[in-house]
Length: 330
Image (cartoon, rainbow, N blue to C red):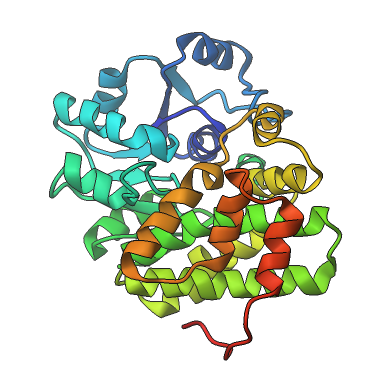
């Protein structure tokens, strides 16, 4: 199959590298100089240090060329959520598009729109859906076992599964697009909270409590949006939440660790050098939840820290001081 991956960050490069030995794969990026360096060196040291990219992987800086190459195959969008609307508008202008899979995990700043709502706005009726789950790009690039879920219409999911499923990459499917997207967006916010908790040395008990209540918060928000509660007990829910909150390769967890140690947000992001979707999604999640009347205390605490309305210690103390309540996902 002909597959084009749009976006040469960590996840886009990793997935392109994993698929190149089995398919005709082209990697596109706006930064033509960076793309030329990748093509020349067969490495993307900024995002995937130490990983040698396969010789079969092709690179292009021409978006129309990347689309044409995949016209009878598959397009994978691996840009941050903030770039999704602009890119889908460009794709609409090009036309003659194959099925589209997006990999971003977040809500759009300002509108608080989920990715499928953005794609629906710009490419109404086109076969498309998210691919998500517990996955660090570096491990995928190294060929380590990973399980993901694709969401959408069954016929679309079959196309994606047949294209992407391989021994080191197991693909499951679901029709719960909203649940998959909510799990992917909110877990990044929860990872910031968990990083703060660990930086403050509050212990493993506190970390476990935070992750568990984070799952309840995610499920509460998702079901209010129409998601299936069972989705949050799967790969794109609890699976992605655990990985992102505890794994040292998690960008959002790293941001939380730096904030918890007293580093200003700007300095933390400069030091990270990559996109941490939770930083930009937190306020959007809070806004969307508030419009539905859904309480999101952990998200609110993270927003207070990010907006410099509370110190990390004050934010977590505020969570602990809340009134007791019955346990449950509701």
